[in-house]
Length: 100
Image (cartoon, rainbow, N blue to C red; front, side, top):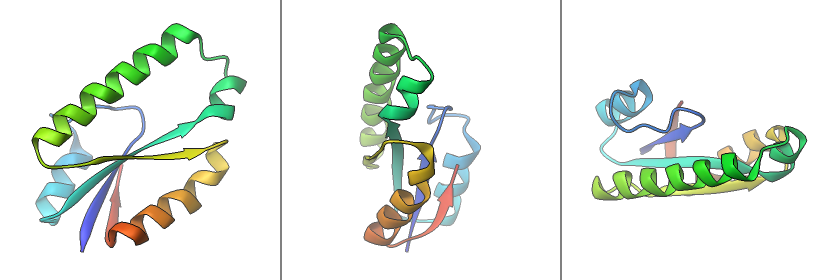
């Protein structure tokens, strides 16, 4: 079984407890980030904020890739859809633990 790290706001690999615990407890680790477009629109995300977030996600994907970890993306309209989307991804990846 594998571990799944859910990146929410803390987009760091280093000095991140969720990452440390996932690596400590699993030989195979995956990572996921959620894109909630409608939710972002409701909170009036400025284009500059969106751009910064996307740049940081690209950097995070590169950092994780260097460690052999793929950064998956789940896309939902709102946060209410996230539990089902995360569960579906965890099942697909045979993950038995979610770290965040």
